[in-house]
Amino acid sequence: MFDTLVGNDQVKAIIRRLMAGGRVPNSLLFAGDEGVGKRQFAIEIARSFVCTEPNDATACRVCSACRRVDKFVIPPSEKGDDYDRVFFSDHPDVGTVVPFKRNVRIGSIRALEREANYNPFEAKARFFIVDAAEKMADPAANALLKTLEEPPPTTHIFLITSRPDSLLPTIRSRCQMLRFAPVEIDKVERYLIDERAFTHDEAHIAAKLSRGSIGRAVSINVEKFRARRERMLTVLKSSIGNIDRTELLRTSEELQDAKNKETFEENLEILETLIHDIWILKMSGDAGKLVNTDQLDEITNLAEKAPEDLAGWLEMTEKLRQELAVNINRKVATDALFMSMAG
Image (cartoon, rainbow, N blue to C red; front, top):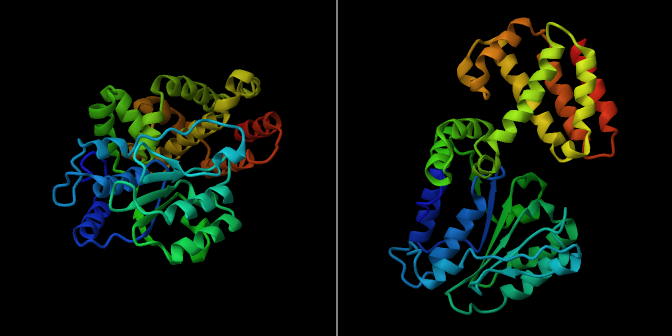
């Protein structure tokens, strides 16, 4: 069990003990950063229950039931009503509820409540995964409470969240919580090489940027990242040493282009990693803690010239990222950030 999943060995050990003792709770809360494998762990538990030829509570992964467990098809739709349901995998006893835009709708939770009361069709239990559970508004969360309080004995509900503190206390108190840690960087790197055909250089960069998230690492296009990073290095070179405000304003203008609109926040995040690397090198000289290790010469050169207030730069950049949630004028805000950095 879990042989295909990377990291979180302590969680694996806990689940194995629960499985071996036949004590898997009816309600489990999987909490941890995005992309660390929470949903995959939930699916593996379900697979172990539905498997027709298990070996010591471990799924065989080759029988028809095992192969069908994770085959979900969720058609895209702009109609909220289309999400007021449980989406089942190819196995009729494994379903999921997913958010519509920014909310898990109360209609989908009511659908889960109905389905949870049905006996299993093929397996010995039914399994329901609530993705991004923190996106349940109070009415949806309260609708789920009754099922969590008195779950049918053959029903298991798994709540997946990256922000457990955003859930109602009454929801948290009715679930056993499993906390997932970021995956070790060396394990992320090895996974990318062995399972995703990344080159060693690509895997090293993506793993460093992943912050311990397999999902994040897999989604990184290293070639595009390098191009965007070069643009952000230009910002820093124009802000440190030989100040070039004209270049900074030109780069700010480029970031607002229609072709760059979707990557604006990503560019800011890259800028943050570079500033942080310069700060670390300036304060401690420890190159082993850098993210952009392949740019050590550039970062070292910038660290030698950088002002003392790099922490202030990080604070301003992060504030701009947070303000993207509201309707700010990005051009004005970016100009202000770059001019503040130039001093």
